[in-house]
Image 1 (cartoon, rainbow, N blue to C red):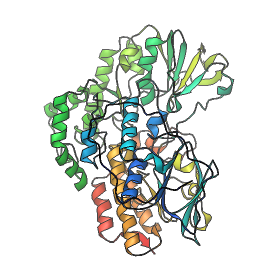
Image 2: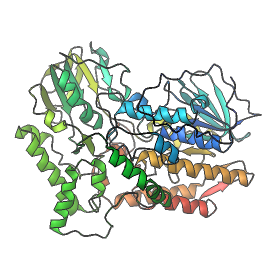
Image 3: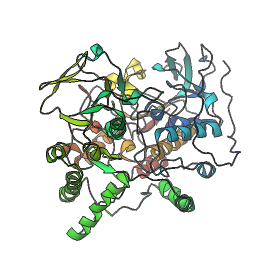
Image 4: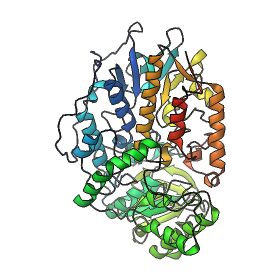
Length: 561
């Protein structure tokens, strides 16, 4: 194999507007790949989602040698795998876009307010084409181990194809929601029909016409897919343990006027992001709305702006009074939509504050339960005992079905990292270092793992913000850190244990000031049996400002040697 040559800059040529079209895919490079430690690469990037693509672009733009590795057959990350019916982004498409290139922004036009999975995947493909990124990746290749060689001060990454790649820096752009839970229920292996996991959906459409379907789970993927499945299926049984808050998407095509207005405001939007300020108008933390003002604010939750409307409600996840008013507003809407009062009550969340689990954005979720061919099964009342050859057995009865859809969520934030055997100094594994829960410094680095960086890792806002722009912020910071190491002619950069412990304590303190700990959410790993219960994202204010201050202060909290 010929390794990618260093580039002094990427060609931005080609200003035509591109519509959403699918890419035929990219094949894996020839085998085996061996990178001699006497001539190591500058960096290896794991993952070809939006974080990995931008990381690779920035490294190449700086003239550094880089090898990317991606388990899928092409770019897109989680959007390569999540092809279930109704899969969409849950923030407006115009915001779910890179900001690093005005030319890229001008060359792409989203068609809908909330883009579908095929359109998002086409966007990732467009980016890869525009910056010629595919040639830097090994596709269809999974990293099985990453070991820090202390003598050589290099990372040695090994893949399931037998590749061995030596590089000075190892950047994990593995995504926060990239390891779906399978249908890990007793007897699943005995089921005689097909089982489809939403996060590993077949690449060809699944026809549910005339089928009896069990949907297990009521998180985002179930809320998006069930209405479409119900339009085809003979009958759908939705097995729910915990109801979720869901807000209406009110999806619609994006008008030319909306696109023009966004592009006109784009420079100001980017400037706010770069300064670490909120890029959208949000009420100040000390704003205490009157009852009339609060009622008007919470009414915005039904205006179709989904997760954005949540941040328009001041202190929603910090003030119990405000949260109660907002949650009651949503509960009242559920009662209005769902005709059967008993079903409406079962679909109504009452165990956790609004926003402390990631709210969902739907098209027709609650209305679906007015259909004669949809049955809600409350597994709190009658737990699932087993999957049988013919269907699902609860404590109350058997449900014969032809197809099972597993929508049980993800091993979030840590799953992709811990499925690899990552070993730092003294051969210590990441699994051992994180035995009590993930510990990082700034969500970017891990003590004992020199020159290893995590893009939107635990301890950063990541899943509580726009993940795509969060990826950009992390990649930009990592690039400056690599430049700092090179500028000092140093070999390694490593978070100190003291700085890491202080940051972990700070992350926990900030979470404890909010209502988040009241929910058994995937933010704390509650959806994965045996996973340590640790609040993983960062909910404090001014995260980018803090990261920039660390860099400006000579990378305080890091040992550079």
